[in-house]
Image (cartoon, rainbow, N blue to C red; front, side, top):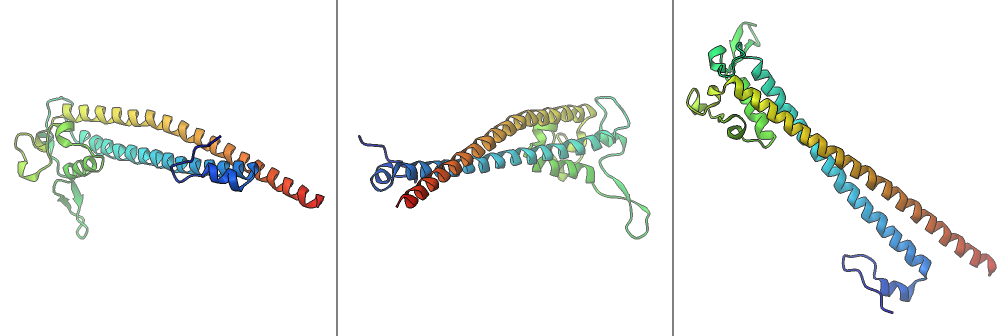
Length: 205
């Protein structure tokens, strides 16, 4: 009977059967299985970590949008931030302590958070963050309270979706961890049996 030969850098079954006993062959196959399980574990850990990072980025966007929403003095969905103080923040000067208007910090913070999360401001807020469009149609300055609230709801939905997927990822990670531990136990048991068998042969001699 001819046994297949692995084509992925694994064990050459035919060669092993010709040069080693069955216990050695089983031990090597089990050892390779442990290595494969380790590789799957590493990939799954990367997947989970990537999901954690994306959730963190979404949470950062949510925080910035909530900060913007808090700047509206009106609860009307059509209210614009430019009508209630604009996107600029007022902070104490580092030297004098006097209040100083600090550019467009709120707007820029939202833009950077969206960019880091891989989100398009036009899709989320139907507006861009280009300074040249300040006050113009389609600029961030024209965004309404209703658009900010809708964006907040959408980001919360994205976070929930990522969290649900993350739970599935974690279950798979736990399952892989259990299988890897089982593989190690089988390998250890196989190695012990092989060692005991060799010791018995030596004692018999």
